Length: 292
Ligand code: AMP
Image (cartoon, rainbow, N blue to C red; front, side, top):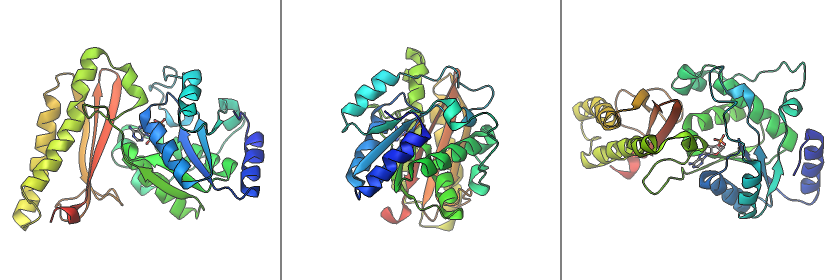
């Protein structure tokens, strides 16, 4: 296990010297099958996989769960042994943000809507730490989950705008058997909240089915009507869970995250809701070409 940036650089140089490509999987720990799927994909792409475990204070808002966030490091290390024992980087806060640290990576545009509107400082914290991890590890590729769809858009934009030579690989969302997207925050849910949380993924499945069944892309009128209908359908489904409070339901262009007024090209449906003090997000990507 590596604790310092200096040791990390040394490890990375050794990998490159041995002609190995490095694949980085950035995480905040409390690992589950979703994280492990990223590690497995990284193992296929690269000869040397690196998992970072760092609960990044910069991406939490003042009233968010930074202090409560689970940190079961021993269990995480045990889980990583089941997926090829990648190298693990576990810095402490002072290593990443030493006294006097005063930098911020800010990406505009795609950081602004949806999550950005509800968590205004979140993406600056994400891009700052991810860029630091890219530079410290000299990684060749980095692996992210579709579960955090907007985060992927933001990272891609950072990589493009700053000419960062890191390949970004996006892996599908891993779900519980009933459809709930796996998340470290699911462990906050009480039994009743956990039972209700499933409506989020169910609402997206309903919306997807509606789009496919109604062949909505055929006429302009239907295309326009459907957007409202889809949002209504998602809203009604989520509201069947009495404790769920919706933050947003958005239908957007998957590259720019601009909201769509008609659905006639690829689209992503993004939802976020709170249950108790836990905030859950989910999304589905619709490839229109597949359904025409
Ligand atoms: P986190 O530890 O929550 O910051 O997540 C670290 C990485 O794992 C991010 O790229 C997430 O998108 C990804 N991830 C989290 N949950 C899942 C999931 N259910 N399926 C696939 N990837 C996930």
